Image 1 (tube, one colour):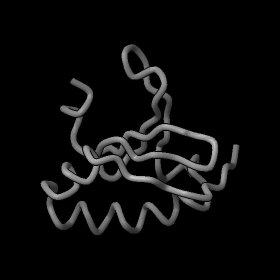
Image 2 (cartoon, helix red, strand yellow):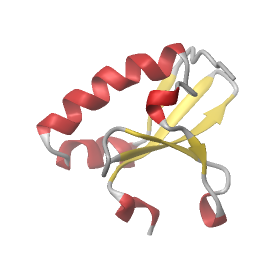
Image 3 (cartoon, helix red, strand yellow):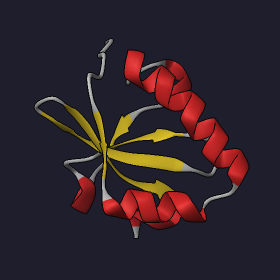
Length: 89
């Protein structure tokens, strides 16, 4: 399944969390965002639908420990949060 993303919006929570993550993760996130825009289900991202209270969201891996949580909307996606598995709590 391939899906191109036209637009990415960033929630205030994402922006706040992004400021706190290590520079190496920020750099990796920027590179992977380009992959994400061309195909948000690229195997390198390990994109998956979440469950439970996050059932309307998806997540993809930035690194082994860091994830970006996002939600689809009419014109693209909204990045909700970035961080370790702690963001699911």
